[in-house]
Each structure stands twice: as structure tokens, then as C-alpha cells.
Image (cartoon, rainbow, N blue to C red; front, side):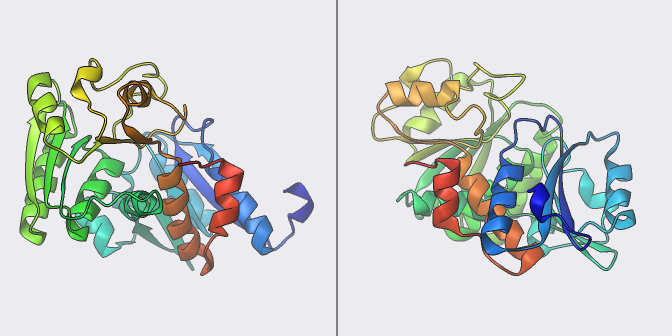
Length: 290
């Protein structure tokens, strides 16, 4: 990458914590190189405490934009000038676009997740899914899935700071779609088992499985799973989480978070550059295999 940096190079960031595990810099920089674009993408460790200053830095340093990941997705909107309709509905932002100092927040996680399902030959439209999570990425997935036509959805989350957000998500889905949606406590494992048993797909969209919770799973054992169930995990580092190990043992079709990362990244890439990533090439680079 260093050989192609010039005085005109446009800089794009990624603001999250932890961040050193991220594959996004390699993915975006490879796409820039393949398309001959004079851009560079760098990761910055940014917490909620330093987020406001980091956003000011986008303007001050004239970055083209930035991605935003945990723990900043549901917090960053207050520091931006405008939110896209989808970002407003989700209450979360994962992509910032800088247009001459005006910062607009977008959300591409839900689009990326649904596109990765389609790319993997999975059709959840008109069916029931159960999902664990109520943070930024989970909310985007839940709302996009409902908008796209998922028939029924059971959302599980622990009663933490995101519980109120989950309640708001339920109301948004009920007000804007025909999806039948309910919220349950993730600590109620009997209910979780019951809802998974009645679902076509189980999606894990919490931080469980990645640092510092690697080796942990939202389900106690493989009795929660069955061979014809599809199991997805938004975590991609490690590529195979404890949940996906359990799902593989149970004979389920599995999908980690790499495909979602690619397709949400492509949507953000298009917002910044007006172009799409060379997707087939990027699948090979990221070693995305279904």
C-alpha cells in the first residue's frame, strides 16, 4: 500500500475497540488497489470516551469517511450532522460519509447480512428466525430482515443496557412491517430452546465468541440445535466460534461473519467511492467459503 500513497490520497478510517483483529483494512485496501483508486483505509482504536474527538478529527483532517464498529455504533449518531433513513430507524451507524465537512451516518450491516445469506443460497424470506442480540449490528439485521419479508422473528437479549433498545426495535418493526416479532430474555434458556426449535434460522449477533468472550456460546449445548437448522454468527474473528463448532457438530449449515463483513463493506465502499468492490476477487482474498 505504501507504494501508492500520494499527496492526493483520500483517507478512510475505522473507529472501534478492540480493533486489531479487524479484516476491514486489508479488505478495503485490496479493493482500492484492484480498482486503482487513490484511497487508504486505517484502523483506529476509539472508545465511547474518545469518540466525540475522533469524529471531530474526521472533519479536521478531511477524511473521506469512516466505518464505526463496537462499542460506538449506537453512540456516534449524536455527533453527526445527519442520519440516513435506515440509520434513524436502526438507531445505529456503521458508516460515516464526509461531504465537505458535513458528516452523514449510514447503516449497512443489515443489507450486508441479508446479502450474505442470499449469496450463500439461504432464503429466510417468509420464514421464522430467532436472533440473539440488540446492539447496533443486531438491530440493523432485525430491521432489515423484517423489511425484506421475514415472517416471524424472536429476539433474545440479556437485560443489559441494550434491553430498552430491543424494546424500541420491536415497536419499530411492528409499526413499519408485517413481521410478527417478540422479545425474550436470553437468560431464559428454555424459551430460547423452544424458539430455536421452531425457526428456520438462528442468528448470533452479540459479542459472545470474540475477545474477551472467545470460547463462549449463547447456547449451553448442541441439544438446542438440529441438522436442518441454519446457524449464523456475525463474529468472524475467530472464524469458527464456539457456537459454530456446536452447530457443525449438530450437522447444521453454518455461516460466520465474513460474508456479512464483505457485503456491508461493499455498501460502505460504494458510499465513499461511487464504485463497488470486485466481489468475486474479494471472496478469494478473504477466503470466504460456503
